[in-house]
Image 1 (tube, helix red, strand yellow):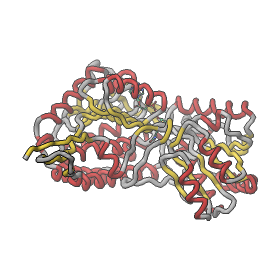
Image 2: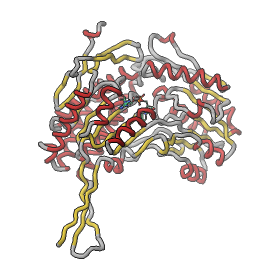
Image 3: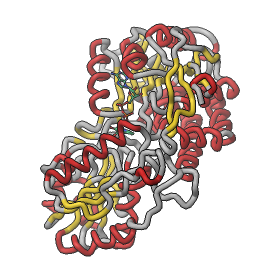
Image 4: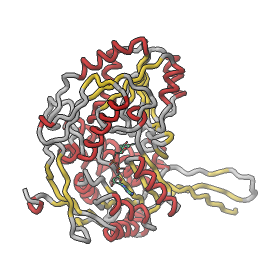
Length: 484
Ligand code: NAD
């Protein structure tokens, strides 16, 4: 099909579909077929400026700025209903764009609706305090006020989920937003933004500018009317954004990469642990920030556990993400596919032993498939143990005792998540206190909730998303002193 015949997605600014100022569009591809399925507006600084100004106007004047917190909550609630009604259509677009399995992407989009419902309820529960002071004849109280225009910049692996993690608390706080989705998965954000009008949001409160990081992302971060940047993505882009935000003295929340340990002790329920380790690394073909990509297994059970893992995974079906029989879908983007294959070579060159998978699967069609892969003989100093692969590649590292597991578990630059499998309460408590990670799962892996703070230690990020805490990222605190 020629590019002209493909569906075209524009920006969404001030309540309308807006074509790019330059008239330029780029392809978005389906990772299962390897073919372009839509064209996306290639935004630049002029489009960003228009969107930020619309968001700023909506923040400063008009119905949004006048709206009570209760009314904000009501329209957030209406949006959550619309998201639930449109979940299937949105999920279909996300699946087509990033190749995630239909069942997983559908449940993720339904969860986005739950997420907005949670923050709908929270909008009018941000309470101020009267503060006793050492001064006579004055009353002091706090006000929590929305920061202003929030820039939301997201990656391709869970587009709407990671957008809602920022947007729902930002709107509940009273902010307005400009979203810049990943250039690999932009259409769902445009379809999503159109729902806001129907939900009753005033024009300009939520805007989307699509495009590349350097052309649309950078001018968004540096725009003087943007107060806060909420970013999920890779470490390199995270650093650049942090530096650019620092120059403008803007606040940031950064959700970055991970190299999370999944730690299996010899006293664990091994049936449960095998399932948890497998879903921890092979769900979404390993393309999750929380992937348990380092399996730390107690030396006494190493061989038996690896054998169980291989048995559990070896027949997993790779294929069409829309097919309910498929267990592992394609890699979402061509550059990511090439990067994973590069790491398979690196691991072999470092001396790791490939005991499962380890190859691309061109026989499955033009899509970007990589077999679920397990390396043993890995030591924690190898690149395969230190660097984020973001693919279906598990590195197995033996350990002797609790102290050894803690040392190896923490010996990476990241600190996003960790899993621990043990039936000992003592071990569970010890490990959960000693592991330097924003989330520790004991006898489960990958559980997240809109109620529960999520974020990283060390190079995995700054700030927290989800739960009551997240709304504070979008609020300023003002102290008011009244002489009486
Ligand atoms: P990426 O960093 O390449 O891109 C993310 C977004 O940033 C895209 O929208 C991109 O256009 C934009 N961008 C890139 N450079 C920019 C710049 N200089 N200024 C402004 N915007 C810029 O990441 P990706 O490849 O899309 O996603 C994979 C990464 O995301 C992985 O490292 C993964 O760990 C991370 N991730 C983290 C979490 C988390 O919550 N911690 C969740 C999912 C993914």
